[in-house]
Image (cartoon, rainbow, N blue to C red):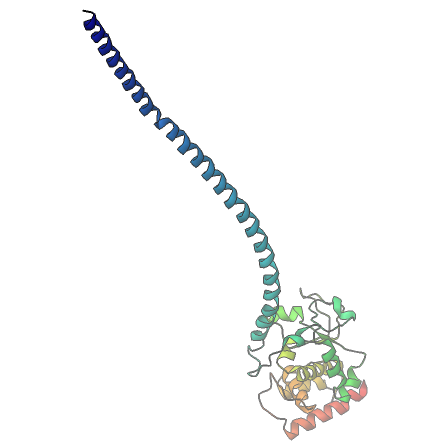
Length: 285
């Protein structure tokens, strides 16, 4: 009987022990996922976010902004200005007046160090003022004597004449000092204007003689023929107008460029007419 109880007690103890072991095995199996979840999630989230944000943002902001601002501004300002001035001016010289055009290099387009009264004149260009003064000094002596201290010579684009013809003319004779709006009495009364276009086309000297001939015609406007008629009006009729009369004087004084005259070289009759005109009219001044 005692052995039966002892056997039952031992059996119960074994079964209980086995149950306890089984229960503890379930607990260990269930607790395994917990450390895996904690270990895996936390380091991945912390490590990945911090490194990517820090590394990418800082260098890109610093490196990109500074060089773009510095590099773009300087070369664009320097490179664009010079060629635009040269390219735009040259084609304008080819329109209408002459088939052969001289292209001026950059050194010739730099303004001369002119410091005279013309700096304040509207339309003054000045880059060829010194050359123009040299041409004036080489004018035929008769023109120099007649126009000296009566006429001023300006390298520029006469603004009122530009409004009349739609572009800057080669040359202008302005006896009344005409402003851009057509009003009279400016500081350039009795002036001859020779533009940069005339220098670029290599006709400036002949244009100067042409405009000086207009001045000669104007100054001698009160000169009369022996029959008491206006010599100037008669000359205009003889040559076909004031512009053709001035072109004829260009040829008479040794020039070659004519814009209005279509009959070529002076005839003997034309040369004699001009000589008689000059003898009669320039000696009275």
